[in-house]
Image (cartoon, rainbow, N blue to C red; front, side, top):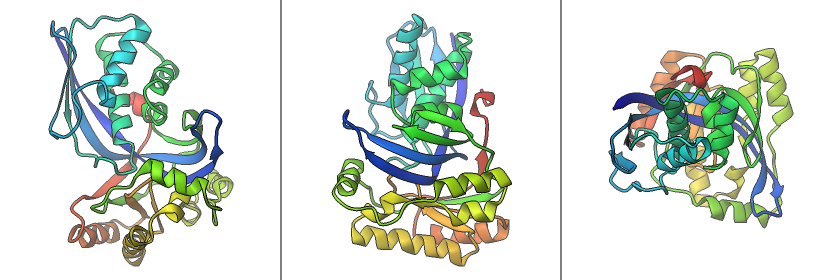
Length: 293
């Protein structure tokens, strides 16, 4: 039997724009994504002699193919014709669930990277991303990590200059958001404001963190129910008051993040928010996930 422990890294949306609904029912997106050091841990074991076994420290998570980590393992084996001789996946989850940080997709990506190494498959990052696209729209990005523009359903990736060094505070309020409901709301209304994605990318090119932070925006914030939108705005305001250069919601939410240059101010924001929101974290940005295995 062979064993490998691998980390799954959360992602943030520095910007998120929904361009329209496609004939296949999906939506065309345009997003600038960033990997951060909030992680789940997965223990992969091959050669167990038993069918795929999926376990998690959270009892409510599925233990079958509906868990993206298990689905990724099955797709990898199907696509490569590989028999791992039995497989066990044990997931220790820290990334909040249904939080807009692609936790499930990050787990799937970690499985792809980990099994590629553990089984000695030698697959390129590009091939892993192709397999990841069969699992979920965010998985290709989570395989790659880095600062990137994501288009199409999220699977068309273009590397961007790295986000300048900064500190990140994440805060997930204690409510969930229905992704299908937010898309339906956007489909039925006129989007009042869109992110300046081109300006944000130009700021990345210049290495100007202040201008990146100033241009962060997520169109889903306009689609939130009023009471939820007020809570998101309140969390953003706490971050700004504590010195964040900018704050925004990630994905379909409800996680809010702020970018900081000053560690003391970031720690202060984190401690203040943690008094009310248990799932509050202080993290750093991460690049080049394929080098993490």
